[in-house]
Length: 257
Ligand code: CAA
Image 1 (cartoon, rainbow, N blue to C red):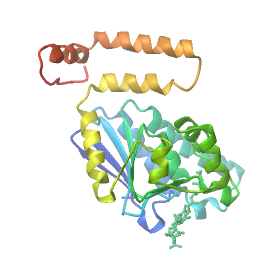
Image 2 (tube, helix red, strand yellow):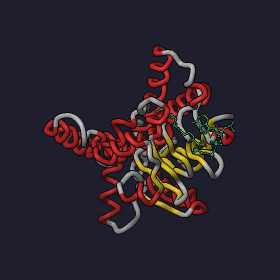
Image 3 (tube, rainbow, N blue to C red):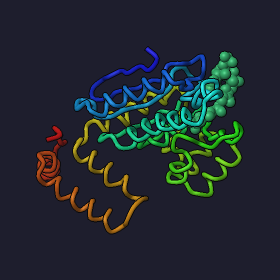
């Protein structure tokens, strides 16, 4: 299998398994990744999705340059749309997505990590948008999401120069949420994912929907969306359970109903 999916206790870990090419995504791998993400988005028992790369050297070293080399304009357009579809799913599926960045996250690799809700990195990871040195620009959402995640100035510096940053610099700019020693990254990712899997899936889905609006569209409408989703939670068992558990001084048991 070129894209592995491992399920354990509500957590699905998606591993791009192409270590010989540092997990770069060619057409076959990108299409398979999209299919896997579509399946997981619809799967109710999956509460949290983790994206990572096989081996200890790379998360995803980008789109496959050898595949892209001969593309014409229409093929390049479809290739861009395929990456965008993967990013769109990671960004909008109604459950948290976590990029566990275990090495190189370059080009399309960083762009998919940016589409995830949260990013944890190994201290050895290198992150960047080197497309400029291939005579192109980021094509899987990086020119938008990098600026939205960090700052416009930092995004332009990375995209214009192609300079990769290490995990410490990425953390400093908010590009990743936390950095761990390589041997600890998976365990810390799992801890975070388990914590999220125990929360109300409904509240998490609405929280994701509301926060996804934060940096786009009309402010007033976004606040109204938040108010609507907030009110909707009061029709759920999870709201009753969460508040009862607080009052009764016990841990809540959320069911997603
Ligand atoms: N595409 C295709 N093959 C890749 C690749 C990529 N993005 N990244 C690495 N590989 C392959 C190498 O060609 C090499 O294969 P061979 O052994 O068959 O030659 C193998 O992976 C190992 O790579 P290196 O020998 O280069 O390993 P290294 O440790 O010397 O260097 C690296 C590691 C700095 C990550 C280097 O491989 C590199 O610069 N890779 C390209 C990174 C890149 O430019 N990514 C962006 C692609 S463009 C993009 O993603 C567009 C978009 O927005 C959608």
